[in-house]
Image (tube, rainbow, N blue to C red):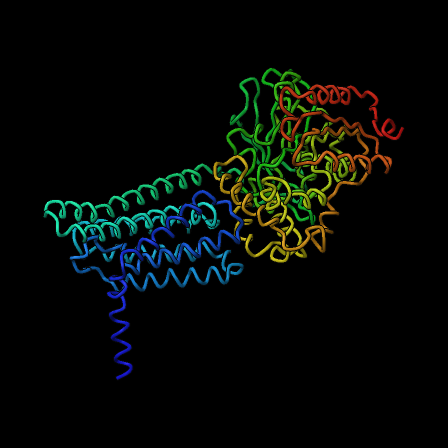
Length: 612
């Protein structure tokens, strides 16, 4: 008897909830509106705070369903005709998920996208199923709200780092719309009831408007979801792709620097030049043979005979395979190549590697010196095998940012790894010279977590002793993986920047000091402190927010103290990219210094002057 009574109470619970006082629905609606607005205007809340807001929004959404405002008409004179038990079960699921998210934030934030996607899809299916019963306005609103949830659920699956854009903004929109609809339905219910003693036309008009107001809210929600879906699809479709050229042939020579493929290349190449895309052999950091790609360019009117060679090590374009400069719309601009017009005017041959793992199979040696330097040197070796050009036997190396790090390592490795390349000068422009200090400072830099994601992915994929989960906080792991999958030139980088700003409010992506343990040791290994026999030029902007000028000065002082001769130039007011802009005074210094190397003039050093 007792069990039967309990079943009866549970059976009629939905109906009891649906008859709650109208003011309860208003309170829940106001709470939903407030939480939805917070999620929309503050998507960059810290991950912990964002989890709290989402949990509360889940609860508000569940209460909204339990009060019957989603699938019932505002007119209380009609009995509910929808599947109330299914809607109530869904409401309980939203509330339970909200409670779990609030209590267990740290462990659930990484899988938040999948949790929300599942809830939204179930919610969408339940609402679409409920649309088969009820009045016309009820069915219409239920169907549109169901489609909205299904669209948001699909977006949540497509964007794993949904805690910022898909969950925060989109679920904020959903919560806000449902909250407004809840308030309107409750008020229409209350005032419509009070007006029932008035004239019949007035009462009927209010009831009709109250019923169809939910349909209007459903239309707004669906339009917003479709709009965001279109934006999301655009962001994903504009991501660069690599074609079959980058696939290694079935038979690859064991020796590094062998030219495997070459074809004419025009993408982003000025009309005054001609270029080729090349695929060649090189070696990874551990000495295992690998394949890399690159671009070789020369002036269209270059005379016959050997031409001077500039080997270009590009700046950061990303970590993923599709981030190869030669796969991008403007490959030379993407890697921040300076003085392109002057290179063509001087009729120098440019050899620009993509590095291992960009275009070709990875991992990409991001800020890992051996892999970067070997990619540069072997690209020059391979370019010598092109029949269409004749290259001089001497090479000057240029590099900016990540490429500056690569250029320094190229100078270190040249004599032992590729003496045949004959490097006669190395120019490192705003180089990421001190890998350990730079990595430690990245959490303090706006958007620095994007670059941090590239570093941690490269080091954990290259070095077995560096464990991703040990160094990255649980709440940030999904976001870091996603950031590492995007190129700096693609529109989807906006998602990475928003993720980085959110992580910054939690202080760091790192669970422990990245300069400690195996990660710290590997970073120290990849700081180029070895001797460079060729003349060395280092240029640094004094307004650089990424490569700290003080860090660069300490690095230069260390090289000078170790006996390295070098020319160090600083440029006031120049930031990280501005220092290599066409109007930068560095350009003239770089060209004059390069010409001096090609003419075998004695190199000057600023180390002695600094010591005095």
